[in-house]
Image (cartoon, rainbow, N blue to C red; front, top):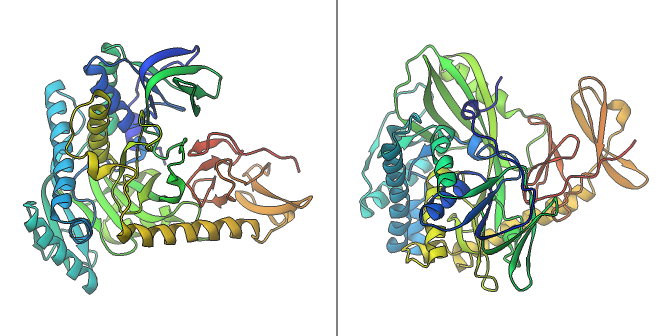
Length: 497
């Protein structure tokens, strides 16, 4: 099977940063948030430098399901209950404006990015979740969200009720960004790939330090790297948790019936489609789990494939990929100043798998904060907010889970190398230290210290993706210990056996 369908669209390559420089704004993270923020600022004459430690728009942006929707699971009734109708309306309006932004930009530049308007559906087969859908529908009515409860959706798998949100959309993210990136350059924005930011100093000017020793003196910093590589006493490690989900792409003997669908039962599954030349590719996602906590002997791709065969008349399977995202304590993203001590350092994170619209919200909000323009969503998304309910319960639950994983990793049972089969892993003890070992199909052993270089949790093996994943904060490393995604910026130590 291939990589994500979006990555088949090539984008321009950029050189690494090879010298120190000075700028107005340094953006760290070349996903859709970073690119859109750079676009907004550069268009207004702000001198921008964008850093990406790998390739532009390839990580989470290249592994999305690419729904442009305000239907973010069951959220609006919960927002009304916890934060009031006014704040729930602000959240919805921010998402609606994000969708309007995409429509306007795609129309203005005539971007061929498979933009397609679709209704979005939440569906269930469980009685308790029917009641949740009914409460969510009442929330839609309070917030003037167009939609309806329906008894059926056009699929044969079991379901009893669905909630429709009208006139949402889907698109091809890299095809869209392939047009946006040149606009940044056109307005003198600078972009550097293969450039890892590792620290931020203040002495007295703000300095972004990179792994290769090239520094950027900057007035403002925006950390758009999904998880803040630099927390600056913002304690983001205690206020978010990472989750992975999986996607397969296939053809079906059936015609796709239209619409975008999301299961609110467990396990959650997502369905949409894309037209790829003369083929209709169905995208089935789901089987989510906390990063580094995948159940042993389970294969998310196999489970999705079995569902597609059983219910969706699948034929040929072409794609499979996974994605990672973070959930905040109150389910709203953190967008704004990193902390009160350093108001010129900004962050955008915690999109809860709804990165397309939240990226557009973040880009506009961050640009407004930089240039001093009023934005109605500033208070709603400010990172230093804290609510007694639900934040306190989520805080205790998440950090209890992190502590459990930290201790469990140090006390995990060990195997012996001689029992390893090809394409399998184990943790062993060597001179009193834990060693993570993977044996590839050529019987070659790859040994690493599984202690995460972020905050010292013990990484666990992810067989589906051949990676060492941190169960505490979501850092991921390949079988040789190289960082795949952060917040870690340093590789795991390679060891000899």
